[in-house]
Length: 234
Image 1 (cartoon, helix red, strand yellow):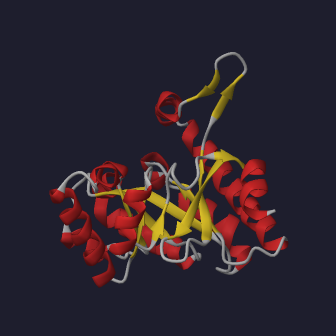
Image 2 (cartoon, rainbow, N blue to C red):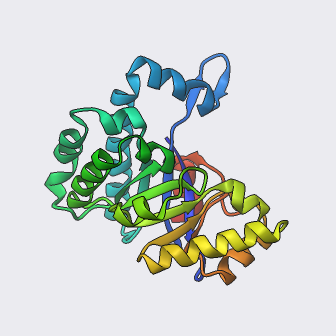
Image 3 (cartoon, rainbow, N blue to C red):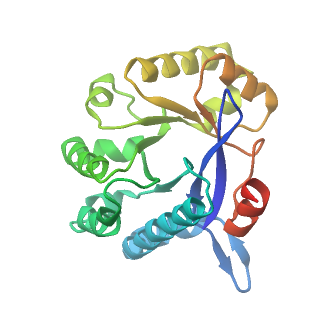
């Protein structure tokens, strides 16, 4: 796993990290996720790999807690195939129930994935929240963006897609759209994370718009766990 830091937009304080899967090939070096994640999905190996990611995410959070870094959280991504798997919730329960909901593991799911079976998605997310997970809707604005389904989802956070973040300082239409997304999320009691922040100008605009958290290369690139600890926690 690599970790990419997340920061509170107003205070600039570290609030946690997103765990991102990387494959370091012995000959080809670091292989981009877009080249191996589809293979994990197609073969079904994503079920086993996803379970490993959640175990590692929880282990990292426990290490942070033991070192006195209270309040930091680790977000992990869940694929469509995992969400639909019959043992997914039971596996999460086995991992998280010993902590009685007092843990810092968050689940991020893409917006378009939820629409495949909205009723099933709502049920699964409710069970995950009951286990103490916070739920983030990733890539928001790139899919259906239906107010009807959004009001039904048991979610805690919306993540503004990086395609909007990259254009926020260049397009009045994008700026207006992001403004409305943040206002909508806050009206529903959701926090907002902007991903793909690569320039200070973008960060400043997002702070003015009352975005809650920021994530992107301008603030910190994905890095190995040991490097993350050395740069942000030691």
